Length: 374
Ligand code: GLV
Ligand code: MN
Ligand code: MN
Image 1 (cartoon, protein in one colour):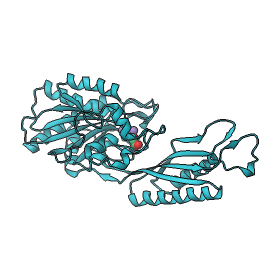
Image 2: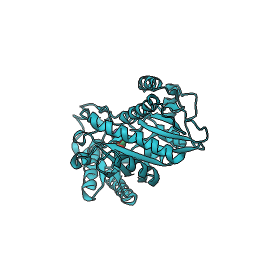
Image 3: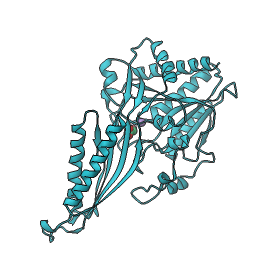
Image 4: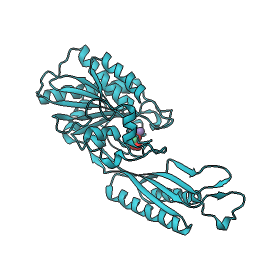
């Protein structure tokens, strides 16, 4: 993260921005406006990635925002409002099982319970931040005059390809719950303990993974995933005494998602009871579905229409920093078509021609916003 911030920070400086790191480790590039009272527009996305990731989920939105600022400077276009380009840290939530750490800090919604969450090595968010060397500036932007937050991101799905369109305006983002689920039984010798005397936690986890798949299959629009599983102590000749899994559940309708999570928790408890195990269920995140701001969205749609490309509106099944930022300010998002809809995979790719359209849209959006503010 430090190396990513240093590299992208250099690109921000080359685009003429003043660069700082905030107390949550977010990278911030500042481009002043001509009117000190006009407020600030936030642009950007995240710089962290998943494991075995592609290059575009997150970074494209940061790089595009930097490019827009560079373009305004090159063309000597002065905007009344300032622009802050944000490169958020830890949007994906790999390490602590909870997403949007950087953007929640900016939104002023990072609570103490989250700071106390521990990673697999027992290191808390608080300790990790202290070790990273927190930046000198407070992360929260609460109380500032903000015009909104606009995020450019790859679609991460196949719809734009299907429709033959380079970009889409996002309407809403699905809600998500994440939990850490732990079954505890008793470890033992794989050669000596007969099958009927075992309390094998990995077998319970196996039952649970299939229950998660069945829950997703049973409910239209529901997606439910176990993306990480660990059997402990983790040796070929030891019966697993504990097994830990991540759970990720999403749906556009919050009530459906919450019902599904409750049902899965009951199912996990039943699996544990049937096998004589303990269950620990730690909810690590629950974000409601979020609608984008109608005014900013219309400005963005007008900028798309001006390019002469199809007007595609899409909800997002993936989460974005815009979810956290929507608790702080008005948010809007622009999707860029990606090859095969592939994401969270090294094969992620975009067509530079589509990115060029998206940059023109973002540039036009900024000018339209300046016109409105003026
Ligand atoms: C972010 O990529 C998410 O939707 O989990
Ligand atoms: Mn992602
Ligand atoms: Mn992303």
